[in-house]
Amino acid sequence: MFRKTLKQLKYLLILVIVLVCFPRSILPHQTSVVEEDDLENYVKLNENELRLIEYKDSEEALKLKLIQLEIINNSRKKFKADPVKLDILASRVANKMCREAAENNFVGHWNTAGEKPYHRYAFAGGYDHVSENAFGEWSSDNYDTTASNISSMMKAGHGTFMAEKAPNDGHKKTIIDKSHNFVGIGFYLSGKQFRYYEEFIDRYLEFENIPVEVKVDEPCSLTVKTNGENYLYFLIIYREKYPQAMMPAQIRKKGSYEDYTNEVYNKMFAWDMVSYRNGSTYKIPLSFSKEGIYYLHFYSDKKEIPKPATLNTKGKTPVSGIVIKVNK
Image (cartoon, rainbow, N blue to C red; front, side, top):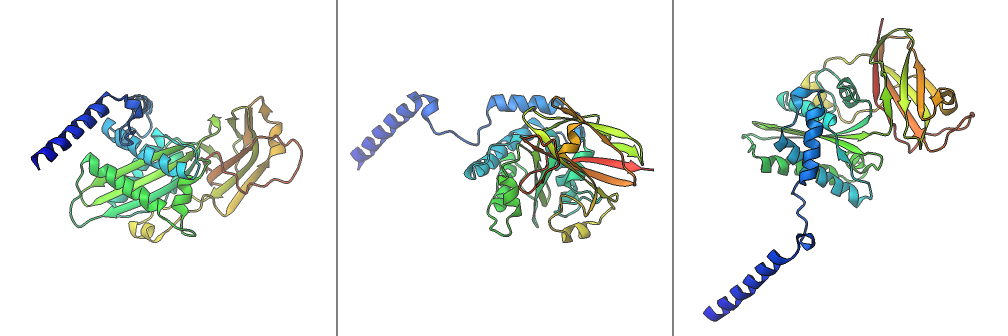
């Protein structure tokens, strides 16, 4: 018995020596470890982002989000979707929503101001297309607020999305959508409430001179820059009334949200926008004849269409989420 134990210890000692001496590159990669270069890069981005500063992540929170980012990208990889990067502004938008939802005991896509995801992201200064997943959990006892438990709860929240089955798999479809290239991650854990939100971003255009607020019939313009490989394909402008405040009970009764409204104010086709193009830059003239909020969806394509033709946005993703307020 004693000899057998010594023999086992000998083999164990040899195994330890082999593992220590082998190059690190051939050892299994630990997915929970955040690469120093990645963390340093995101710390800089976090420091440079001045919008929603009151919802800025600590370095510890960033580490947790980068671990969660890898989990999200592993989910996408299984469905052959490219990895997404962490977006700082969208993460702060998500943090804000998580806190409000937890403190008011609801889970949903509207906040108490009655704003939907594209409102909240645009009002914070975002201009890309956003798609939101929301998760909440609560307990009769206070939660453990350690970093390891927060990470575990975020992973579990994401897991509930990925476990969905068709036809009720909207959250899962959002995660594995191949058009997304960034994601905002938000969480809030306090007392008996936990919230976790994912804000997936489609960022393919650059915008300048965005008219955030204009008057009725006031001429304005919007500068759009493509990457030089795509052309503007279609613009559809939706109009809606200003959001109205909502009670938590109202929000709890709502389910998914529409990424548009029933009122189409205007459309601009590919051939209409050709005359506004100079190189890869478009200067799009705009004006609005009624009060309200206007939501702009741009679509792009690899081919330029200079003459009237049949256009179809089915299967295409909007590459903008611009919201403009119009007042008298």
